[in-house]
Length: 318
Length: 117
Image (cartoon, rainbow over the protein chains, first blue to last red):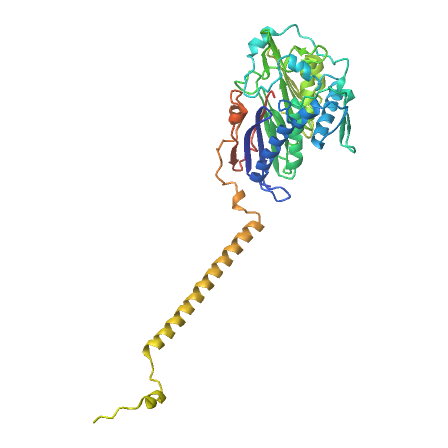
């Protein structure tokens, strides 16, 4: 079977650049250019509905609702379920209910288009490395999704952040739509989902945290996902001039300095890859390696690169 | 004295052939035939175009969806391009959609880059 021609679209979404690759005609007869265009529209719609920074988004309306049980769309229920899954899978390290702490740390508005701090600035600000810990309240455990009733129950005032989970979820939702094409890849700002009926391996490069120079590593994925989480891109100086970033230690509500500055995780889905990447970074080098059960790459604060290779049929580290 | 035929006798005699009327009839016939040909040709051209377009659409070759559609901007699908387009300095509002199509190549599908999100 010859490789079909591939169409690529790049656009701004989720505060990052999103890229969609689609190759060939779907089994439903949809050509790649049309599928890529529809994918762009779908992703922009998902961003609009899940943005924490848009007071009119579905997510913001949920967060602002004073009731303990709120009727919610299927998309919002899926996000809420992802929040619970992230907490369970990471032992509470990936906690998407820390919106208040994020705002106090200086992440109250979108950082789209803003540069993060230089690696040297972050390294100078980092305290002694210490693994992050779950918040004792584990608020995410009190989120209950009822698909039959179409509701989300949670303590009033408990707010949810879509963040990286939203990107991973969006990549997976698009993958469901593009599964009938011979080739596709959805890159939601680093959370990448790859697949297609043709089952052709696609090269994936892991970017250096400094954002320059040669890639750190190369992967090959036929059907699966990869996500990268790090402290560099969304970092800033807070009101007191201290360096801060968006990956918080749930136990302290402060930016986590664990000795890992970037983690890349492979997984069957982009949502799971996103959860594992964040969890590996927050857990620190030793436990983080164990969390990369499908393989991945850790970059330590000294610049050391640790590649975790696990052979999997759906995704493999080259 | 020369005699003149009466009005009555002249009216009852057969009409002589009128050359002008015959010419008008022949011209009308030519115009009619010409109109028929023009209409038939128009219908034939319309039907031919309709059949060609229908066959193309039915077989999944809609030209509006073809890959040779002029893109907004064309980028080579390689890792360098992906990295360049993720430049943090570019705001979301300033990013237009860009589209590219790549020919099948032996090197495999377009490379993607995973980076901090």
